[in-house]
Length: 183
Picture (cartoon, rainbow, N blue to C red):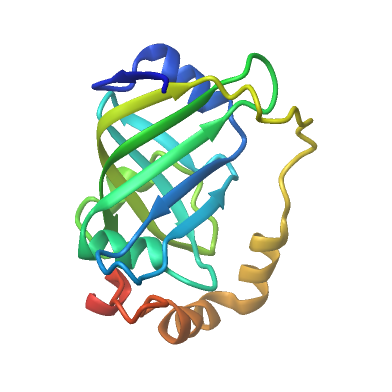
């Protein structure tokens, strides 16, 4: 079952900072709604305080995380050790979407390198941290970051990205509005 904590300890933050990839999970309230689970990378996650985290979210084909947290706030992050000692760390909390037009954008964005394809920052207040063994997680060797997202955004350009977000990032798979739809 693992161990539970009320906040992100220094050893947890060190583990998080070492990982090259993490996963974010959200779900709508409707029992027949689609659960979202997305891999993330590109040095886009930050521990802001022992109970607050944020990640830089790039434009993508959907915007489920934003829709789900707008509806109910629930969010879970998972980090797995792919090298070194086996470990899995989960962060449970309540999230919110911060868009570039929001007052707190500038302060939050200062924590990241913000490429052209930046869509929003997801901020979460963490109320529970869980660690577990990770014994069945395979070992992998990190080879580097992909540059596909950056190339895609550069090819679209600022106006193309705005149109893409308007066309593809306003509504979830289940018809829920995202923060972009409410701006």
